[in-house]
Image (cartoon, rainbow, N blue to C red; front, side, top):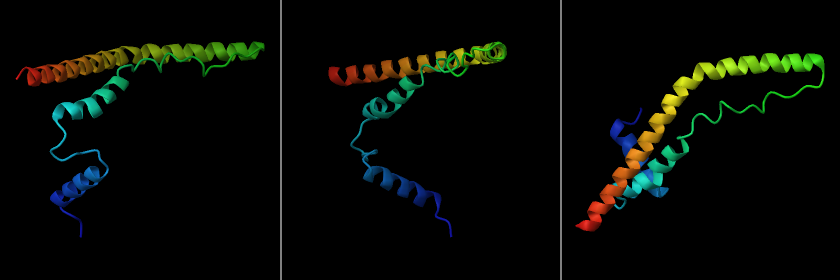
Length: 115
């Protein structure tokens, strides 16, 4: 028989608290944001750097090698042109989300200090 939803959630919380990832009630929201969410968002800010990597197409000394490289570069450039616009939108969204959450966490900390 399969466990119920409540049992699964309780087991997950128990495992996470044993691993030190979730301090039940001890960790504030700001600490959770600073510890988990902001680093993840920061690492996802630059989505475009991987599509511009040209090292996978090797230079070839022969005529056919140069022709092959030229054809490969044409394909690579057309693929980049196709996905670049969407990637730029995603990167801008990631950067704005990261900065917004960072500002909100700072404001919450400042409000707590001023009280």
